Image 1 (spheres, rainbow, N blue to C red):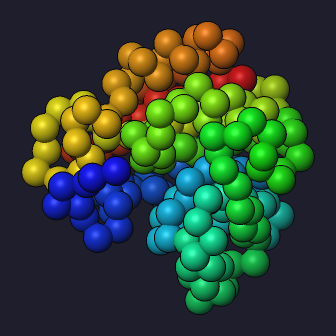
Image 2 (cartoon, rainbow, N blue to C red; image 1 turned 90 degrees about the horizontal axis):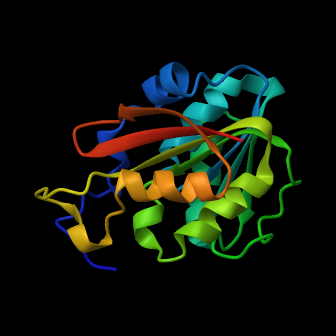
Amino acid sequence: MPVNNAPEKGGNEFLNPHQILSEYLQLGFGEKVADLGCGAMGFFTIEAARIVGDKGLVYAVDVLKEVLSSVEGRATIEGLNNIKTVWSDLEKYGAANIPPESLDAIFLINVLFQTTNHMDVVREAIRLLKRGGKLLIIDWKKNKTPFGPEISHRISKDYIKDIALKLRLLFDQEFEAGQFHYGLLFIK
């Protein structure tokens, strides 16, 4: 998928993981979460691991094994022992080797613009969430920027809300995740 003038780290460096996870998601100590499509830098994975602490667990999930190796390396450097990497294709329902209905929260950060199987990716996230669990979706705004994915690949927030409604998620809130991204929070 073409990305024009892409930032070196895929766009997540324009986001503030601590603020988003603490203020909007209200992630807490001891929670079990997953970062689906974590990316090589693991921005949200690393920050989530700090927040949930040694009594919590963060699954870093990606389809690229080299990405998972990178996240493992960062976790080691940061001294974080509460990150477990999982190799999985998020477009395949049931593929992620994580116990169903076991997670307090799941993040899909800059993931949906990279696939055409939006419904399947969200269904897989829902499968892993426990009742009352939260799904955080952040993606590129659907307007022209000097970098990032082509506008035709960007997913509108209304489209995501429609998918969530069809999958019986409750809409919790929408927020500005940064200058170039929107954030949506849903509850199972």
